Length: 255
Length: 307
Image (cartoon, rainbow over all chains, first blue to last red; front, side, top):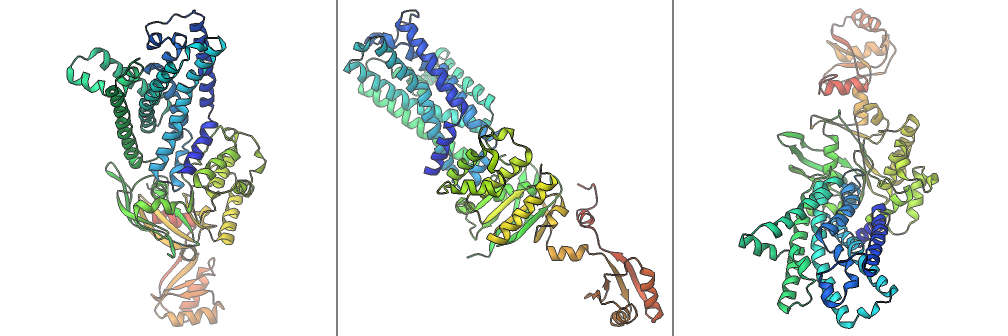
């Protein structure tokens, strides 16, 4: 599988969409931080406000499902789905004698890492850099750094399940446009469930999904029970989605 | 160590209610160049897709390098190189970069193999030119380079001459002959053009409507396609004597059923029949036989235009 991971890394590093996202997210993120720090864009009522991290409020935009959805699905479209459709290079990988499970896992690992870099790491790093450049580094206290560490670690755990879902959508649809469309649709459905459905059973079910955890993990105070719950939701979802992916790729006929 | 590189046992693939291939049994021995011939839609690509693991059989089994355990088939596939339908390439990468991806996923150590294979397929001077700007022939050659990057023992090529110009076809043929001769490479090629495979293959499998109609060696095919006069006389041994003494020819064969296949005098059948009758032999049958490769193939599959 090491060979496959090396091949996937080589491919993503030569993927124009990946670099395009890095450049645009860096620029966009820097701009948002600038607007927030200079008070040109007033964001309030976030969890960051309660911890004194208001100057990093722009990071919150990247943790909104509809925003990271677009970023991740774009990467999945042009990095994963394209291999199944236009270029058909997935054929070479399958015929290379590697196990399909290994092919799926290598794609998942590199795609997830790429998604984390673009969606989480870049906004976070630009936030830190902007805060330091504008002389606001005093907000980066030990307790705030601990909070950020906890929140982003838990968020990343949920995010790993999300990238697995998007990867699955890309593999099933084999089409760039459909990958973006179905991922967006999926997030809209989850949003609708959160806001519109009042049935207790569905509400409880939703509360135990990664979509609920995406906002929960940023709460300023989390009890140990809530942290364990977030970890369990993330890990169980991840295992289940990856198992689904492995089953699907092992049964999939390559056109 | 198995002598067979590939053996299929009643291999079938069904899509909805139709069989794309049905109970196909082919055997490819080590060092053979096996030509799989069939019309478009005959099931050639399906067959190759099953062997390469892109699709799954509805029933039957595949034995690759003596290994018929479906779970371990992937390991055996590591010893293979293949192009199915069209070469699968990254359009925004150069030839070298495409080769590098293939080298990495095949786990081939060292980068020397890339330049060697690019040289072998005549793509050393493409530099940073992106594959999307390659001609069809260049793409086909790069596809072949990818298939050869790990020095496979078994090469599978689906319609490899598609998009190649006449010179490209000759070059490909010579390259495959060279690899076969020097490295003992076993090759499975598919084509719908019999004459194209005839110059290369050592064994042929003729597939039609998903069924393997015939499997024969190139020698057997040549025999079947050789033009001759088929003669049946009341006494075949005397008939042979007449040919030797009166027509001064030994270019004939007496077959097991007593018929004589005469390979010359094709334009002078009257002389042949007169020689027999003048020597008191009764001619029971006399006809000109033998087909061109295309005629033989079309007769086998049920005539031209039959699909």
